[in-house]
Length: 331
Image 1 (cartoon, rainbow, N blue to C red):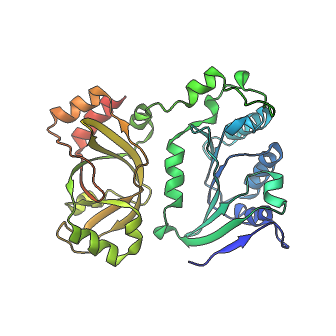
Image 2 (cartoon, rainbow, N blue to C red):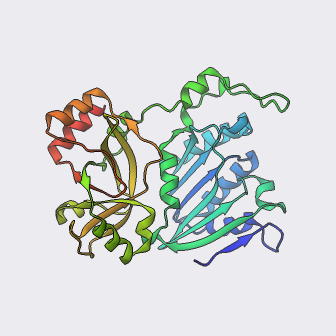
Image 3 (spheres, rainbow, N blue to C red):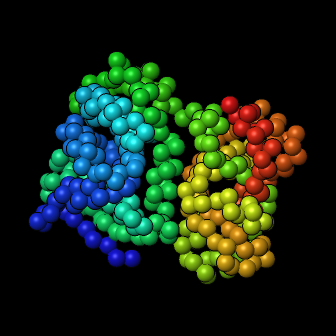
């Protein structure tokens, strides 16, 4: 893989390089621990200049509450002004410390990963290091999918009430207000899944792929070794999946029904194996969440028998009627 890098010490700063991609992308994704008030204003100017922009997503952190109350308000205002196009969320992880920038330009996905926060100093002062590399959207390496996992583990910035937002204390550790602590608690997002993801596909773990199947897929494309994947028995099932399709995976773990919300990362319909030829890859879960009792009862009453999750698995796609019942139970 070819890559470029910047340390803010050459003729072009990291900020100027990002600006060029901002102005011509159709989608952008930003994950940054810290963001400055002036950079929010600059971001709005870039959004205005890009007539082709379809959607932008930003994840920020409340790490030590270094992002000021004024900056948060400007972000809330930006989200409100460009509702339907710009989406801004706050990571539930108070130690979230990413510095990641992605731009979709045509059929190319451009990634920037490094040490630079989305601040004036981070994007223009010597002392930072950012790596840039490109790849086809259709063969995305997994970074963007990892971003989407973090996106699902975040809350909309509109939910943050600023009346309790603390002023940073650089002498002592800033105390987390109780209201914000409750907001960021890792509550199950199963209710949002039922309501927000109209095109969500529910699938459940039913078995394990043979080693011969796994080897055949990885030999065909080594990228598959990075992901978990499952087989589709029928082509009609396989045709439901597109890149970035939302999926809810359900399986059994320590006696409980658990789930993981993810997206389709790779597709293959060309390799003949003992487990068929239709396969869907996704980013493996860092953690799982337990399904509520009512949804579990729907699974049982529909004769769905789950097994424990394996590295490479056989999943089955739930039928339309089962999906409808389970969605209702998840609300």
